[in-house]
Length: 227
Image 1 (cartoon, rainbow, N blue to C red):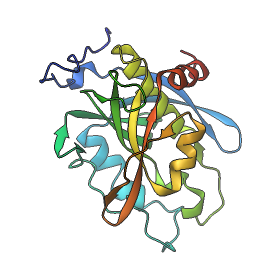
Image 2 (image 1 turned 60 degrees about the horizontal axis):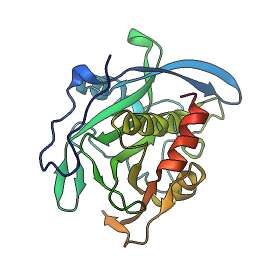
Image 3 (image 1 turned 45 degrees about the horizontal axis):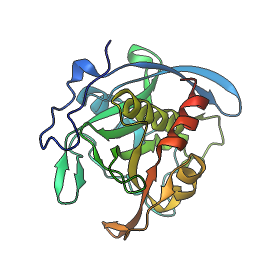
Image 4 (image 1 turned 135 degrees about the vertical axis):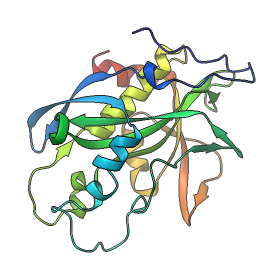
């Protein structure tokens, strides 16, 4: 399937990515501590959200009955979520890292990414795609589990790499922007994203750190991803 072509950054209008043009990618996740698991990145459809997230994510038997502090995504409605950037909504798509097939399939992580570019801060005159809602399933978060059993890791890195790949395929050199949640700023930094010298984004009482993946770091991320 041919890469999606985004509108030019300064064109003023952009065509959204159609669901038929989501590019499925085969990936490998890890069942902690070291067993490879076949997976794929696919469109996160409303049906997947309804059947494999929501109650399926937060009602998993592996989770604690109560949490010390409520996860910031605990009450999110993924179907209704959109990317807001400087007072306007960006056209975007949702993707998921999925294991298994049919009734046995499971969403291990999910992400939303813009289909129209935003300005680069680190590289003026260039542009990025904007990433939002990059989260792993609650059962893959050790601090939320009660049973100490193996869980899947690697979905966050795979989804972030997919975002860089999509950016590269659309002539943006892999650049990404996002607002990092407090507990994951260090995680993003290890993958090449840099903090921006701009004010934090405060939403529902949580301060998010604006960050950007520059082109050079994106290429390193993609090289490690096998692209």
